Length: 145
Image (cartoon, rainbow, N blue to C red; front, top):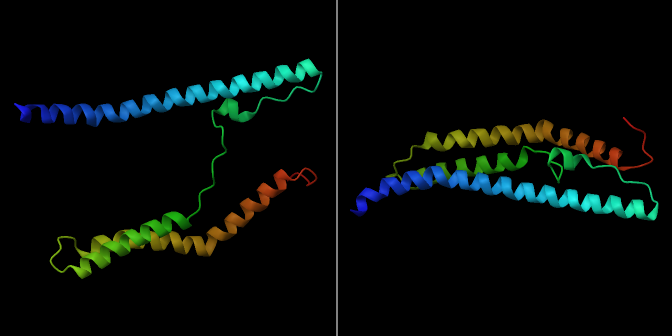
């Protein structure tokens, strides 16, 4: 009797779990944006009451992003892939009776090395340009690019 319910629960939780997570994410995102709009409205009303200049509507409220996206770097994914591949290679070399062939560890090892080579060859220069651009935008007296 219990064996008949295992596939039913597997299908329900396999499909229903991600759907519930997506619904929760959209609900929380809606409430966060609503709260930000309420706070912005209160700020505008306080500025009007005091006769101050009305602050402009932040673009993050329109986009739905409250925090600017972090720029990606190749260092972290390179290290992750490299050490996953290294662990697989070392694990398969240490245990000669393992079912994992060595070449399966060489695949993520190669991907990680490619990321790291890119980071050390070009990625640091790109990050330096991003940093200069960000600093130029934050400085009020800096000329606009």
